[in-house]
Image 1 (cartoon, rainbow, N blue to C red):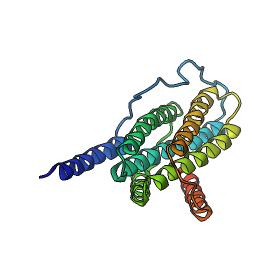
Image 2 (tube, rainbow, N blue to C red):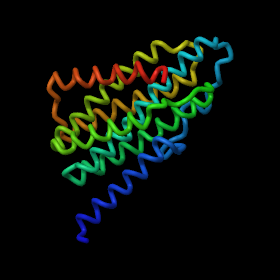
Image 3 (cartoon, rainbow, N blue to C red):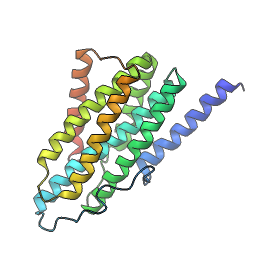
Image 4 (cartoon, one colour):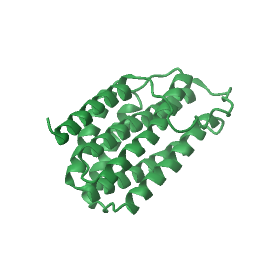
Length: 215
């Protein structure tokens, strides 16, 4: 077996391992501690507020499952080693977000989306296709995805009860990180996506968020 085939086989094995750990495992923070660690839990949340917060955090958890899949798919099909390494670093940082959202769901006595395997598989496929289209389009896809995620986080921050400072701390840090990922992708040569593709991404995201809020 030559080196190229070995590398491909190795990537596939690592990809499967990553998928299983993301969907079924317990994510471990790889970079930073949870930004809500030193923030007190709100004591006056009503049952309705708690369910709404859990729905929002479930959406964000799904978003991080999708981010892991997108970056892994793009890393597998990236043409340049520098782009592949950038995707893998971004996936590591997104793993922090995944762990924070899961911890918050546990605190709210709620569950992760039951459709996470589906979300992961679909996002991995999209990431792989973006990588095959070329690195500039793959990076452009990252930038647009992150811009749309920032917009969702703004909406969620506006919907959070004022007293829920733990969830707010998590989402504000995530917003900062996602904006940074978008900037890095554009500076690395990401191309601006055509408007029809942006609209398809927004439509797909809307279906995902509406479903993940409940399931």
